[in-house]
Length: 144
Image (tube, helix red, strand yellow):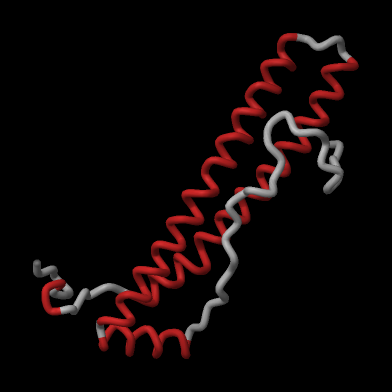
C-alpha cells in the first residue's frame, strides 16, 4: 500500500505528525471549549426566554423559540463527545507514527521545539446543563 508520501507496508506513513498532534491536542479541544460556551449561552438565554414567556402568558411563538433552544442545546452537547473522541484519535495516530517512523519522529520533535503548541484538555460536555435543567446560576444575562 504505497501513497504519495509514504509506504504503509514498510512503516513510512508520510503523515504530518506535528499537524495531527496539534489539531488533536489543541484545536479540537478549542472547538469543544467553544461548544461548551455555546451550551451555557443557550441555556442562559433559554432561562431568560422561559421567564419572559411565563410573564407573557406562555404565547405559542415563545414556546416554539424555547423548543428550538432546547434542540440547539442538545445538538451542541451531542457534538462535544465526537469532537473529544476525534481529537484523542488524532493524538493516538500521531503517537503511533512517532513510535514507528523515525523520520516522522524527527520532524515532530523539530517542529515541536520551534513551534510549540499547548495541549488542552478536551471537554466532553458531561458536566454541562441539559435542556430543561434548572437555572445554572453561572454567568449573567446581558440585556440589550
